[in-house]
Length: 345
View 1 (cartoon, rainbow, N blue to C red):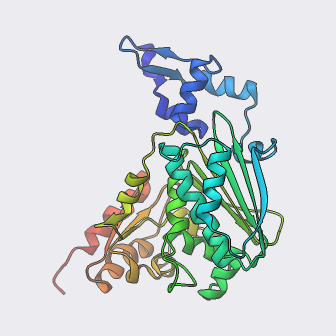
View 2: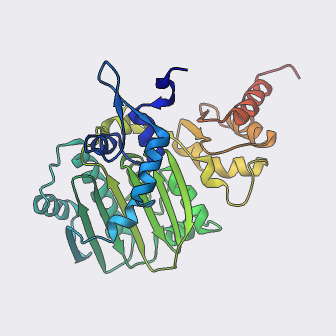
View 3: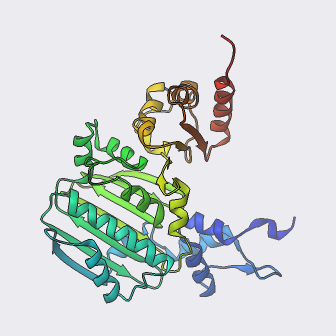
């Protein structure tokens, strides 16, 4: 068998390790992970050899936690009353020599100002702690307030049953307790734009890993307020405008992408009520609902029927589009689509 059949490209290694392609390129160039080149000059990797080298070097499983244990590059505690997020961002980028016109600079400028504005307008905290870590490999910031907590506030405002449901609602976009002054888009787009996004509040930690294309919910020690952490590779080629374009039409935020995995809190995706909970509130704000099944191994027929037949029929002009399905889920969805086709009664 051709040895090259065992080799993978840089994007596959990046996804496996949860690092950006540019970071993988840097590791290969420096000889820290093994690679070869095709006659055309493209890098190829033996994934087993790369895993072995990574294990030998004991790279941290959680790059955010590892970075935050290092000495920060910039850190201040600021009073929120009268604070302007754009002014703070200007000072930080000047102090840290961040070019705001690079792809990474545009993404982090958007993410930082949106998350600081949330703390200013919603946290009910008197102060905020801002910390930045900048290296050649990554930029990370943390914004920590000491107020009511993001999940608790959304839970109370939307009358949700738990903080886990608050995470679920935030992941949909346009979910806010103050529609008169906020669109509810900031957290949604920030979580899609950066490499890694993490929001911790009320003992619940929500992580969106756009390098591994994964999400996670975890329980941590209960602390007051809210912590938002964002990471980006300074050499990223990700385009902020392209990210917005995925979910907008004529500049309007019309498409959402709820992640089914986030709704699995000890409950399999079998019942119609689970499908209704996932779609709750989306009929008002969106034209297209892309339901992301990444990481979901199986679904029930009632769940699929509610998702693809009952809900769209009850909401004319709204489309539900399943994406990232495993073969088992795809089988059930195709079966559900067949049953959803119009038929004589």
